[in-house]
Length: 477
Image (cartoon, rainbow, N blue to C red; front, side, top):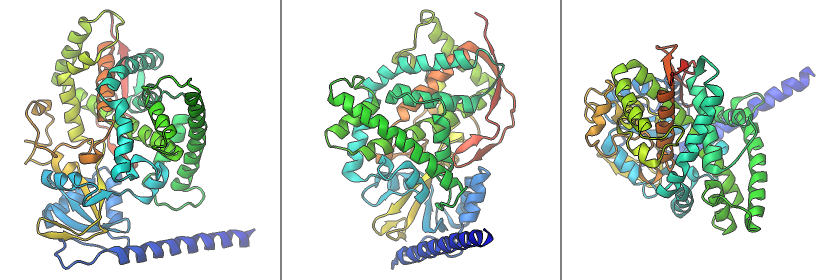
């Protein structure tokens, strides 16, 4: 038995070493040589580079403050490093954001870590380029355009009210973050996709998310191994649902053609996309829609609790809307358009606490930018904090001031949903989720934070470390 264990450990160590060596040689070969001038910066150790410092500051939710900002001070807005085996250029500023995000498919392409690609799916829209990306985005946009969103509003209202009646009316303490995660998960599956799964499905999706930025090493018990197992379970579930849906639609019994899932299956029937693309994009949409939205909602309530004057103004806006509707009548799209101050509060909360840090691109040609050369094959990382926390774009950037959004914001300075051709396709759905949820909470409940000084951490996305517990009580009629 001992010999078997030792053999397994030796084999695992051998495989890991071989893999790391292969990656190192690949990246060493692919670093790209150019006669141009590279940006300043430190590349660190071979393969490892500055990855450890990057992960350490990310874990503490100080990635910009502890990793990026000190290097901006030392080298300037553009500098080089090595992250997760790849030589990487980190850029900051609205002009840099504009240049790299608007040149998607021309000079750069989206580039995600290996674990993310395997778990989200190689056939998801985040991995598609050019015409295939446009095709998938067009299918998704059909359900998320103005007409589709108008249909979604009453469905979201019903989901929010049902969830609050069932889970908030009978309790005095609520984990706001976990509560909104469960709710937004339900909204994405039922309202947007038209799917119904068992209650434990959310936990399965959560296990996948845990491994999205983990080292892609599948030894028993690792985050990545557990995530892959959960991903297989989700794939099996979805393949069954996709085939059942296709059979019904081909028999003329599909119905709910406005639902995004039906749109994806219709695309498959027409031969525009494959079954694997339907499955992978459903998985990606669920993750993209519910985790980031939950964090945005939680941070909005955090800011409202810390700024009672803003809460009073926001509450007045919602009381005015509620008083013009009959009791029990759902909100309409026109009502959400009246929530101008509420959206300013939410936007300012997302400026201070962006749901995404930024994203990676990969140069598909040598790029000349700001007097430097970025060699083909190198990664480029842009960050939301590089503009969100910059005095050049936002006066007193660390001050919470929703009214700043009454004035035009410079293009590519405010990017909580990304930008360019890969602007988040669900950003308007996220907006509706945030506005509708806030409406029903502030008009129905008195609430207060139980951990006002709660820390924000990341694993791999930002979240309040204690789940943002709040005390709630129903308002009197």
